[in-house]
Length: 327
Image (tube, rainbow, N blue to C red; front, side, top):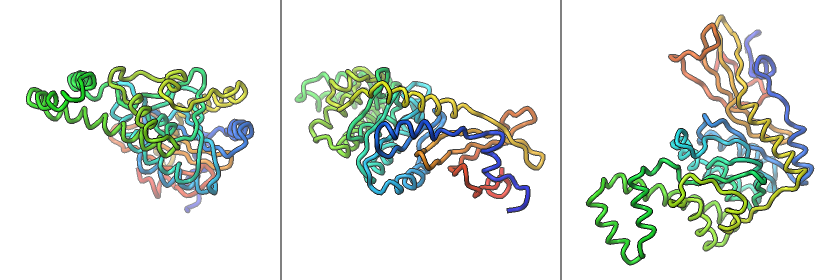
C-alpha cells in the first residue's frame, strides 16, 4: 500500500469513529453466561447474500456452543414505505436463520421492536426473550398483496373448505390472475419460511403451522405481536429480568445511534461521505458494513456518483479507498 493512502483504519478511527461497545456486549454475555452474537442494520439496508460469509465467519468461532442472538434494529420494517425492502430481507433472513441453526442452538434477545427479518430469526430460536415493550413483526407486508387481493384472501379464508376450489375458479375469471396469484404466493412463501424456521428451533410440525399462520394473518395485516400475542399463538417467549432488560435496551440504543452516524473524509482533493449501515458483533469480534459515496464541497452525496458498500473489520487495513473502491 502506498504511503499516505487512507486505509480503513484511518477512516474508522478518524472522522467517522466506531464507538466501542464491548462493555455493553459483555454486560449481556456475563449476565446470560454464554456467547453472544449481536446483529443490527439500518432500515436503508436489504439483507442480502453478502451477510452469509460475514455471519459464518463469526459463528465459526463459537465451536457449536449454545449462544444468544441479540436482535437490534435490523433492516426495513413492515411499513408501507419499506414493505418491498422488508419482503426482500425476509427471504434472506430465512437463509441466515438456517445458517444460525447449523452452528448450534441459540436463544433470541429482542428488547424493542423487531423487523420482519429479525422476527424470522427469532422464530428459529429455541427460546425468545421479549422485552415488556417489545414486539415481533408480521411477515406479510401491509401493502402487499394489494387491497383487492387481500379482500379475496380474506373471503377465501372465511369460506368453508369444500367451497374454496369453486371460489378460486370464479375469482380467477373475474380478477387479474397476476394479482390473485401474487397474493396467494406471498402468503404461502411467508408461511413456509416461518414454518421452516420454527421447526429448526424445535417446534413440532403442528405447532409450527399454527404459529406461522398467526404471523401471516390476513385478517390483521401489519399488526405487531407483543408478549401476550406470541403466547396466545404458542410461541415460547419469556420476559427478561430487570437487569438484563436494561443491558439489552442500552445495547439497542447504541446501535440505533451508530446507524445514524455520518461523517466525511478527504482524499486526493475529493470528498467522501461515510456511514455505517450494519454491524455483526461479539465481545471480541466485529464486522461493519461501510457505506461510502463521493460528496460535494458541502458534504452532500453526489447524485451521479455510485455508492459502495463493503463489509470490513474496523481493525483491518485491507481496504484502500483509491485502489479498491474506485469511486
